[in-house]
Length: 210
Ligand SMILES: O=C(O)c1ccccc1NCC(=O)[C@H](O)[C@H](O)COP(=O)(O)O
Image (cartoon, helix red, strand yellow):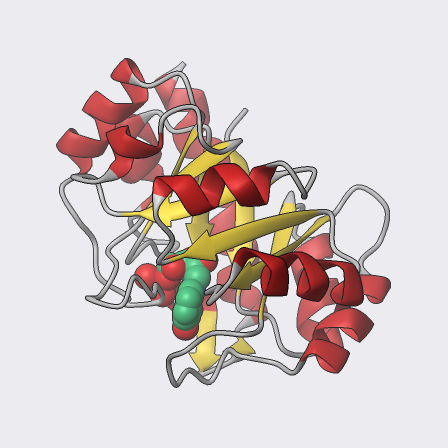
């Protein structure tokens, strides 16, 4: 089964829509050094995490300046897992010793350097700061090679939409997929029909890939 994470939720109604659509995880973006409409305060992230129903994994998505800040933020927000952008492998190893589940976001070229440093690798179309949410796809064939060569589970992200996720899953065969802008009505606001279609089309793509 291909796991689905819907990232950049800022409102409780959107969190419910993500859960009702059957997604596996929800991403709450806080403590990032870029300007994004998907960022929420730690307080808001905590309130959203507390509203997540059973079996919907809450994920803090952040860009650490120091590993210790991220550990404190994750405890304050009260999430099940942490996804970090813009960290080197050594910082990932340090962070992983303090959080239960660590996902590192990286581009395809750098992904092999994180093998064994994280519980999951999110292969994304990152900008120069390492931030995601670009809405751009990357070379799926290259990510397929990573899926085949790495032990660490690979999550495909970057420019995924309800329209292309089925083909993406068939091509890459990832552990999971992650979407932010492709399920939005506007910055930070989810389109519930697109959230439902994204989850549905991921499942269909995964069936074809079997
Ligand atoms: O989405 C953001 O604005 C963002 C900013 C800083 C760090 C991470 C961010 N997004 C995190 C993500 O989980 C993925 O990058 C995202 O799902 C992929 O985005 P998109 O291409 O818009 O689907």
